[in-house]
Image (cartoon, rainbow, N blue to C red; front, side):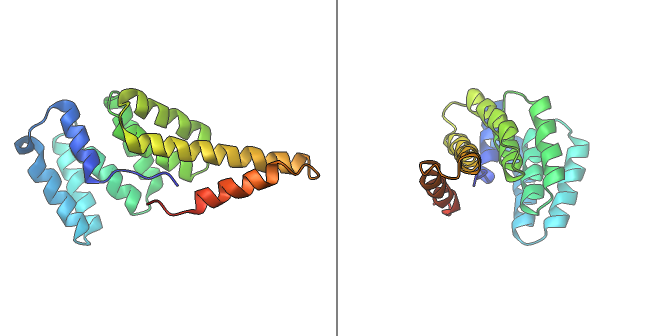
Length: 173
C-alpha cells in the first residue's frame, strides 16, 4: 500500500521554498504537536485559521492535508493536495500524497500520473518511487486477475497473481 510522508514532508516543502525555520516552524510545529496530542479537530481548525490568514503557506496547507488524510477525511484531503499541486506545481510531496489517496480508491492510472509528477519534480524522492512501484504492482494484479478470468485454463497468470497479492499484503517496513 502506498505510504505518505509525515513531518519530513513539511521539511521538504519548506526547503523547496528556501524557508528558514523561524518563518514557519513555530506555527506548523504547534499545530502538529496539537494534532499528535490527540486533538485532531482542534489542530485542523487551527490550521484552517492560519491558512485563512496566510493562504500561500504551503507548509501549513500540506500539514492540514496530512491531518485530513490521517483522520480518514480522504475527500477533503484530496481537495487539499489537489489545490497544492495547482498553486505549487513544482512541489513533489502534494503529488505523492494525492497519488496515495487515488491509489487507495483504486484509481491507479490517476495515481500513477500523480506519482510520476512527484518523481519528475524530485527524482530523489524515494517514497514516491516506492509508492509508484506499489501502484504498478496493483495494476499488474488487475491484469493477472483479468487474464485468469479470460483464460481459466491458463495456469501462468494465477501464480503471478498470488505472488503480487502476497507482496501487496505485506506491511510496509
